[in-house]
Length: 194
Image (tube, rainbow, N blue to C red; front, side):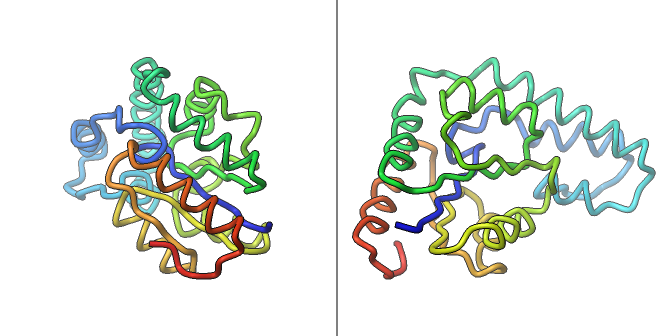
């Protein structure tokens, strides 16, 4: 089997634990901009502003992400962690992508017991641009690539780089979707996943 499963963190693997609207408001205040900052990481990266202001904005974001890890309910997320473990045990390569920092993404994956079994972790420290994260993966790994995410931005990035995409409405949908991917990959189906 030559399947790579890409999984987003916030909203896909775990619930959204950061109040992104409040965070955007704080970042806009620090930067003195009226930009919608959606998606936050990509928008901040692309803004043409003083680098010291950007560093301060990234610091505020990192602080919110770090604080959010204390609200992770491992018991609530055990079924998601088990689904990822079953996918790996079935022979799928699992790569995690996120616009979180490496530091905070690592904490999330460690708490879920997934850090040591995933194939790779691609964070905003590599690039906050989702399409570039996906390009990195498809250039590195051969075979079928399926990306599970929760936003329109995830879907748009997947389309841009030609990666199969499955959108979850909630992190609670992840186990069912992962099981479908495992079944499709193990049966060597080339049908587009729905």
